[in-house]
Image (cartoon, rainbow, N blue to C red; front, side, top):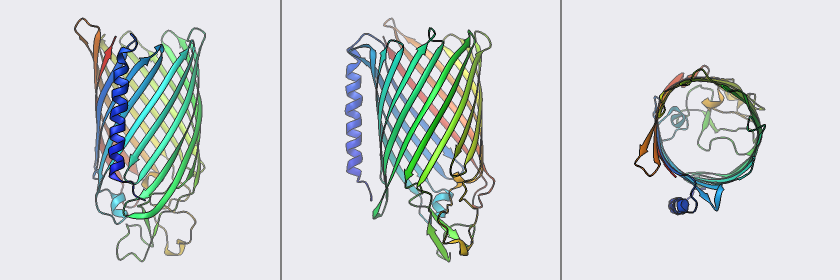
Length: 377
């Protein structure tokens, strides 16, 4: 099934209307309102480029305890990567449109937030919703959080109107945020997710008898087959401490495990320096390592074509990444009206290492993000 481009036009029109509606509510209350615009660009050595502009507005409605958020993003993705080559496909360019709406209300120390997300691309459509609660205790020294969400996805394949698959996700999690002293805050998080339905790639094929891609000369080449159910667990610990009035240090660790036998570790550390009240410079490093899925192999023999599950997805192979990011934030005061302009730019090179993927051993990527936001009193 292929989703028509006219539907994408309706998505963009709807997004524009909702953003304008949220913008028009800026005068409803005297509390602060914000409008933010940004762009994200990623280029890697695997012939893949992503350009993603986005816009977001936040405004109070009725009173200062209730706010609405509306955001719209576009991802334009161009690739001639090894994944495309492995599928015996030509280079592709696709666009994804995403709309997010959220409404939150504070009942004293209890905050309730509901959100809806709609995403659409030529061969994929997704609807998702979430609900979250947070409760402040002990004069806001302790915060308890809970969230639950779900999504329903429809998967198609360009050029094949008969291909129509479905997938759904249910997720829930809890968090505890604790202020230990005037300089230190710590946070614990846990979440679990159940994914059911189609979880392979509609375009990825697996060659049997060779570690290379599918070609015209390949004796046996079959569409990828992944399990139709996946249970994911993740637990995280985050700590931040102020070292001085200008300097702070943050660290985090995340452990992930699922029933596909993928186990991962993510460690991150960052140092933030505020040389003056209006600016912040931060430097961060993130390390990520994962094991392979139980049904992943770098090569399948021709006699293994009867396997229930098989994949050529490098994201399910053993993987290690190193990411460094530098970010500069600056606040500009505009006139006497009290409006502020916040700008931020981040540059992040990343190195990906694939220890057991025969068609690709490493990828280097560069990400650049630029954001500007207005705050109105």
